[in-house]
Image 1 (spheres, helix red, strand yellow):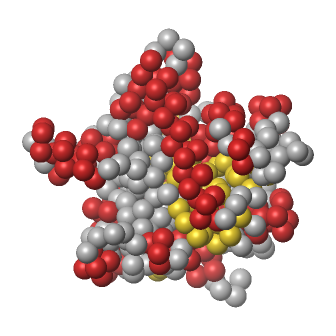
Image 2 (image 1 turned 90 degrees about the vertical axis):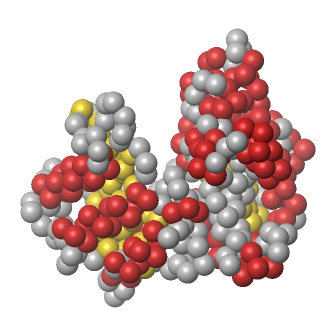
Image 3 (image 1 turned 180 degrees about the horizontal axis):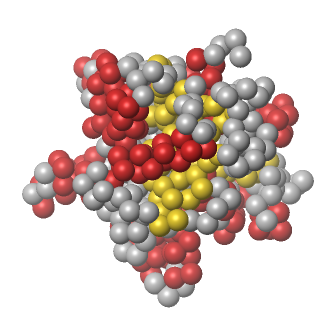
Length: 403
């Protein structure tokens, strides 16, 4: 539904996706059936905690904003809520839904937010320190200012509840398993959206052996069979698996012990290295963003090494997940890098020729929905993710099940 400026329906779901440096917001028409894939009003605040934050509303030019230096996330949320209030002409959304990265063993379904739930989720911050604190700030702010507005948490770990136990386990003492140390998996809202949209585009073929590559600043792969998660590259934390923008990915734990002992690093300092100083940024020494690295790789050996390692890790893990699936029928790229970087997709697919992958260069260059040739044994596609819509759909089902 295409709403004119200032006009929104009486019932709306507000989806908030809060990160450390940005907050995305999307307002969906809850009176429309089915829920529109495109929000009636959306945008994001970028550069939180940085020198020049901006407010970007869809269809409008970015606007420079000023944020309280001591509480920039709270200030950004206040600006977003004020703009939402203007859009709804003083009315409040029927509900607010938050993307929460980690639900641990306790949260698999969309959950109504109470102070008790916020307190429990706060205890999970050490499992996802880059992500977990920020939706909790938003929940607390809205609970304090608008206690009558229902709030819902949707969890990135929930989609992977179908992963077999053998895939969840680590070879640690049994007490670790009993205490909750296991492979949880992340990016679940993105993968759940793929489980919805891929059959719409590709029919029954999407129910086969599929790997979805969610490649953004954070990155992971999900092996799906019959549209359910059977394995994923991220594990106990969002550090595991693929090389990312600033995160290391799969790493020998002995290397962590060695670095801590040799350099006298505290757990906090080691966490800084693994979460913030590694990945593409750490290896290249230049940037975590492939857009900035690709033009430099011909003249900068470290940049070349970083991009080569990035592609290698993805190819290696696709091979491992293909073994788990017993073959591969479909490979889908999504998220910022996956959707927009045809050069990296081409490099990945070139190294998967042994699987029968054959890329159509022209289709890949224009980011087509299908980028493989008819001769390819594996259908390769590009699909835009939509985590906010997925969260809003789950929240609406909880808040208004008869709608």
